[in-house]
Image (tube, rainbow, N blue to C red; front, side, top):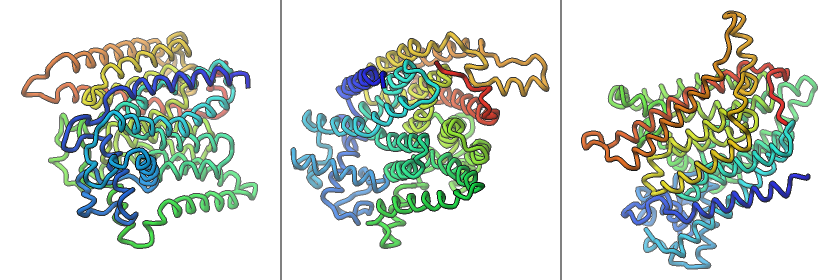
Length: 507
């Protein structure tokens, strides 16, 4: 394809920005006794390399679960083990049992940063490039622009290459799954999705849209006598993938239950820290943790999450189309983030990935959401001393998106994918129009508010009586935005008739 050279340049620029971000501090740098996520990932390498597999998730004198105990699925542990083998070849002191705790050096930082860089290069970036290059009804120019802007999304860059995590692996595997379904390779798509769940349990956010889409396809094909065969293939793929990943842990019930307890620590409460979801925001006005028992909190969270994602999932099952699938990925992930139990601030990345996938369809709203998602992690980024990296990557992303998609030029009902909804409302309220121009003003107010809060959080000391004032304000502002976006994306899903009349032609 003619766009490959330009796409390659976009990918190289994305890699350059990643390496520049990696030069900044990481989570917990020089902060004993627990340090941070950087030490957690290093410690998992230490544990998986030095202990038998059956001891990885159990508390012992060699594996203190209170010190960054392994609480991710088996595939993450295998990845840690692979990194540990490489570390052992370079410097065994980096993963020596007990004595390596809290190890910090320039050489080890370079090694750890390189492991994220390589994982990103091998899994996430190729998936982004292929997905954008195979977009339908999209011009080569838009494909290149989509690739460049997705690779510059600051949230993922700052968390993986700054704060320090490997979200690029789980998100990359999810994207390979989306790519597989988009190319009608359902078995390969299901395999990639299963691997994503086995790498990070939070990828369950995306499980319902996958399940509903594939179930809908099976039911649709069953009318032609092929649905049962497809269903058997998919079930076999899923069971086989999980069996291989969990093989060391399913031979004994005790092993299986211990891993599950580590993956889903419901005893930690409804929420932790300051996260921009519904429960943390509600806690400002109503101390729900004090009013309700832990069991009631869990059930209330489950019911609210289920009800919020039910309409989109039902629609996708009855009408399994790829366009609806992409938007349902956004809606379900956002519902989980807002209402589910024990959500972390970094979980917003699981919503941001599917939003990146529709960047070329609704650029104005997608860019707005992606900027808010990065802003919602501001307290964490400030704690990690990533202020300059955050400002620089956010500004670069904003400029790239504004130049590539001209997001302010055509904010209309058609551009916002709301024409069908507007026509429906006009049947009951003649003359109704979506306040598209007003959205521009709201966007400017939103950007101004987030900018002021960012500057204030950096430069102003909070009152002694309200030490968490600015983080709480960041959470409240972000949560209100996310509730607005949840309504918006659900409107698109429910009023999409799939006849093409409401779909913008991208050229």
